[in-house]
Length: 301
Image (tube, rainbow, N blue to C red):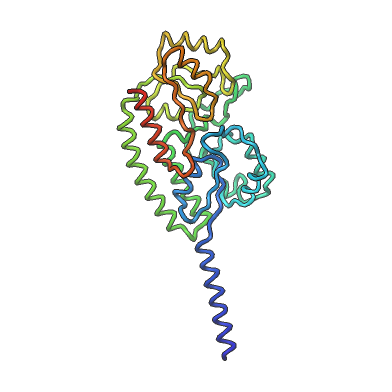
């Protein structure tokens, strides 16, 4: 009888331990870009452990598939990336080298943000002579907070599918995010009314979603073709164009070479602005968007 009781107690302890470990186990998330890392962390909370392959100071088109990244992908339960061929130069290699079948295309651990929303600028013709164009459309969707909200809802549902034990947490976090996001969106739209109709020059066609959301008007691009560095002849053409149709600001991403933008700034006195291409480490999406809107409004004023 005593031995039977000891055995029962031992089994109870083991079962309790297993349940406790399951309750506190985190799912490993590999995010390709910092915006998806920030979003997943906010939606997943304590139930997720998130790693971002890139920072806002890196060009997400061109990342080296390092062994350390392969090891991270190998351990991932969920892959969260932009998609639309943004990571085509490095993500397929990481997936192939990792051997992690859970996060391959078609699996529930494979989440592409671009699949959740409609994309702008889908090319009618695919021709490499036109520069680095994306067949599915412009992938820089994270600059539209309206699309971000749709992506957040879809990502929350994916977390529930992968980790149903924590579904209540994910649902609550998603509700909290939506409430906070909608309040912030109303504030941003009110603050940014002054930006509607503002003419801008861009270094690369990275801002189409920001342009659509805020009503910005692009009048010139420093790159003659996507991904092609500007030549002196092209910059002279842009300079002439701006004399006829002036702009209020020049937008560049923080990771880009700003030499051409600075040259144009000196020639025209149009202010050149470097925008962080994603949230910094430990920065929320709300904080990141807040800084972008405030900076644009300040320069426009």
